[in-house]
View 1: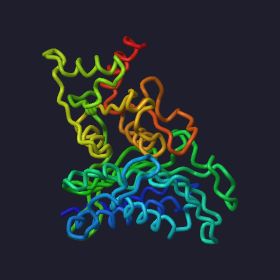
View 2 (view 1 turned 120 degrees about the vertical axis):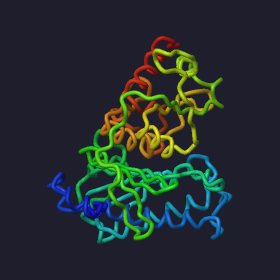
View 3 (view 1 turned 90 degrees about the vertical axis):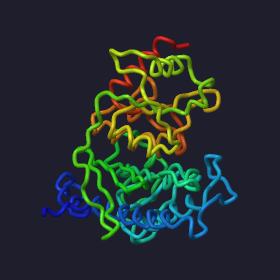
Length: 336
């Protein structure tokens, strides 16, 4: 029986893709892998360990913080701080970036941006949640203090991005700009094993994912596209199937495998969109493009947007390219 490739083995085997990194990026990915396993363990015993429910506080996004949000944020912070490759981390749960300015990190060359627990409001009802991360090389000189501009880089500057989905099985999916690979956690031995090599999103699909509860607030082009998805047309295999979990990682992961489009447009409830450019849109855009898909804000590639602030929000249309292009056509046709 052929033994599956483990994530650790895969990372080491592919170090050659980054000759400039001298193994540092591999060590950084290893620390993320370890943190993901700790978070997975805590999620699996959440109902038994009094870490379900709200903290009674809000994060910088104005969202109620769950106990698991805090646990996941602290776990990833500790894991990244324990290694010497990272000089700073920006988290969706923190108002400001966190600088690692002690001696061990004095020559660190990387910054990490993350949503430590996406979809955490679903935890109480046992729905899949996830972690999203993005890695950049700092723009300021190594040895100097990390600055805000190190984090405010366009998505095209990412050197790695990935997500972990904690579901019926736990999967870590990531890219370093050389394709997308998925690893499933074998709980019997506590190891991520390569299960989805060279992932490719179908060029077209039959799934659309959008919070239709906000329908009345959407731009006219989005409303018309949703109606297009719902209409019967045998030639184009419509109507499509509506699937919306309310956990971005889970919705994205399903569409990546099966083909589909995820929409979070502008609207009166979210005038600039709801998703965060740096913590959610950029890393998933990097992954979907590496898998042959598209990610835009309705007009521009997500990864070309120059960020202005850490917690910047943007509209997002991401998934199978033919579906994203069709949504664009409706946006152009019914542009205000």
